Amino acid sequence: MIFLNRNVIIQPITSTKNFPMSTDAETPTYTKSALEFKSSSFSVPVLVLYSTELKQIQHQLKEKISQAPEFFKNSPLLIDLKNCNDHEQLIDLAALIEFLHHIKLFPIGISGGSDTQNITAHKLHIPVHNIHGVQSASKAPEKNEPNNTPIKANDETGKLLENKLISQPVRSGQRIYAKGDLIILSHVSAGAEIMAEGNIHVYGALRGRALAGVLGDTESRIFCTILQAELVSIAGHYKTSEEFNKVDQDQPTQIFLQDQALIINNL
Amino acid sequence: MARIIVVTSGKGGVGKTTTSAAIAMGLAKKGHKTAVIDFDVGLRNLDLIMGCERRVVYDFVNVINGEASLRQALIKDKRCNQLFILPASQTRDKDALTKEGVGKVLDDLSKDFKYIVCDSPAGIERGANLAMYFADDAFVVTNPEVSSVRDSDRMLGILASKSRRAEEGKEAIKEYLLLSRYSPKRVKLGEMLSVDDVQDILSLHLLGVIPESRSVLNASNSGTPVILDEESNAGQAYADVVARYLGEDIPHRFVNEEKKGLFGKLFRSK
Image (cartoon, rainbow over all chains, first blue to last red; front, top):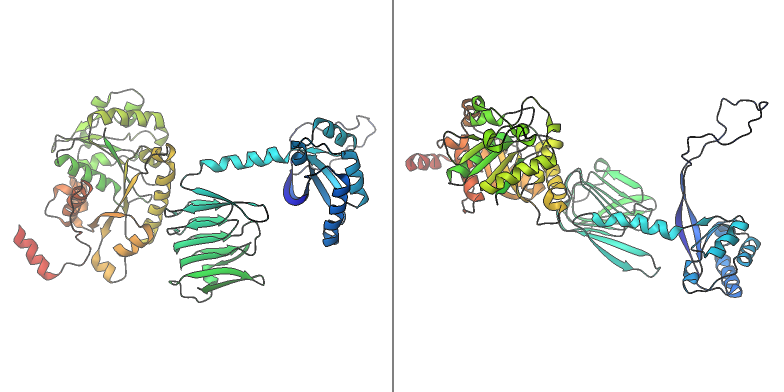
């Protein structure tokens, strides 16, 4: 059993028709709209189950929660059943949900459930999601990007890393995005933009924009042989070249975050 | 199969058409059957530089639309029988060019010609994209100043990602740098980027440095490709470029300010 954070996107309703409201003639006509549908994205803990032993789950769940009681207090939760269903172990969903309510967790959906489980969920007013289908679809368009070699590696947390290695110069106007670390063996021209969810290494002159830790990883760093960047950023903290502190720009340089401040120094 | 060369830059006024005319003439004079195509539909210039503006009957767009055959539209150069010019249309705009149409014209020309030189318009829009899409080699013409260098850099990015070779996953377009309007004197005064400065940013194979020269304007005005002016620095520089492109190993000239001793040498060699 593990917890994962996933982005859940609430899709807007695009129908142009009005909602079937009361047609009663006495209903006053409102000129101002009282509601609106919007698309929003937020993080929700996902409870991934590997076992159907309710007792075992209850025990381990209590243990986990005791480690961070504030974090889990009244937290929404998505239940991922795919793994245990893949092993043809069907869990008693109703009992599980009752227990979750009991320990003050709010299940807001299930994913990867069987047909019977989905019906049970509906009866309990729990929506059915398909996070596995969404995930694979969002990964597909990655593949047709030229001149990159994704290197896949699993770190100890089980998170999938996709590093990217570029051996050609990154030209003005080009944008490169890496889901893991980004390694560039040539220079990055002014007007180019390189972004990585992890670290950025440039074995050449960095003249464009470099953004590391774009998903908020404050531990990520930028390394370059020659620093002539227009802008550098780590986890959203940025500096333009005007604000760079005095370092020897022709020496290998690293940029990292310390106490919310961007530090630039020679290696 | 012909080798398709695109002469491109991104920025305008750096000498693309002058270069196209010169290298096409240079290749033809070396005995290779060469066609040069003006992709600047709506702003036709190549015919003026080549001195054949009064012989234009049909143009590139007519051929694409099937209103004329290639044979009818190609203009044979009067100075060199290996050189043919396909002029652009002056009355149309770049939307008249289609990928299929351009591809078919280049395919047809490929059967008969050794080299096809595509004179790209400025910018990164349709005309420029189609001029480089089918290319095997790219001559990137750059002036030694920052805006031209950046635009060339942008163009190189497009060459690497949006060409036919890139889309089909074939070997990338061979890119060459041609530094034009170079003045060693002004480089020395710090008014102009040096060859090394430009190479530092673009890191490309340098095919030649064309010195700033009055002969270029004179050649344009008289409709004679500058390469035919063998007396001029620019003409000689273009001759070197063509020779280097064809594989000859020639040291670079016109990079440093001429010393007086060298002047004497030049006079003696004549």
